[in-house]
Image (cartoon, rainbow over the protein chains, first blue to last red):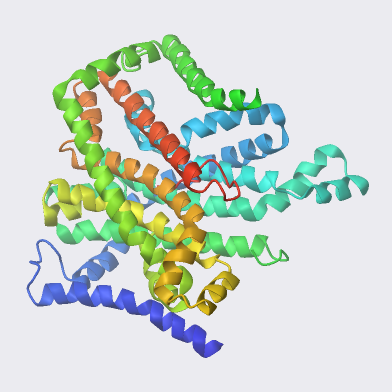
Length: 254
Length: 258
């Protein structure tokens, strides 16, 4: 079994190595001029340099601030509204059609409106991130909470749990796996959206670095923010995965 | 009666949102936030203008091409990953790495390589759509009952035949869910990449109008793009329902991803 797992890891590394080799090959055999595609070594050296420079860290911090602000607003609203819609009929009747209409709307199209209403500062970007991350979290909370087994609720009631505590003691924990799945989707979406918003209009942040580099044709500097945001996405995803494992200890395998 | 209510409720929701917008705009009363009514009145002007109509149609054409190409590549790939653990182990880590990359943000890099034309915009849409379609096809193929495949093999179906006659139909509901996510994503990627490239298309009209302080046009474009999303999604859902009415109803609102 262990040999097989190792085999799979090697198998999975193969395409990543192949992509890097192809990249290096294109550069060193002269198919791609460095002005269009800088060699990978140069990009990663530049990334390492940037990661210890204060200016770059400042931009990263600005991006992360907006990312987390938007994401946590989305979690609070999504879980709150999702739970409310799952347990209360009237709330459901209002929320359901609204979500049905708003979920397929490309939220990024609202960005100009947000800029006009909230200004070019943090607020408009945070709102956009929250709006995009909200729906996956809301929907998975809703589906998770409405699929809680009725028997669990009856047992809790029979055991003397007051009605108002059912929500926090039975429904919320039972819906937790689904909620956390929604949060994971929402987190990756937040990463993507914050970067895009910064690319469209911004004066700082990783997305702004990419646009600035593109305007002056600094190809190496174009790759650095792209790789940084992907790494941030992977790291945050990994952190959330550990949190999930910790919170769901004792749950059957999900 | 219940069906009539559930049919009408999305319309009521739209109406409610528009009324809320109208009231908010009337309360705030600033130039940069026109009322819903003003914006709706501007929609025919935008669509009647030859140039912007052509721009929007061009955007939609690129979106359809990118989406079709992505489905042609991603569905077979996802199905193969779902049926073979080795193929899955081969592609999964690479896809995991690519997942958090904002696809529309690749626009400046791809524009360096392929120019500002259709090719780069279509490629970005292709990239944006591929992952969810692969993921859902993968999940769908993985969940196919082994027994059906064994029976197929016992009746003498070859591996390729089993793929087309058993795996594909069995995974179809899940594949179509992926395509629905992909459809909305294609629209999002299209608008975003046009906002970043600022060359042509619906996203460009939006920001050009904003730069020229034509706020009515900005909000009219938002209505157009939003309506496009709602209509495409509803149309696809109808189609999906036709194709896989036999499947158990699943989540009827898509989970979405950017």
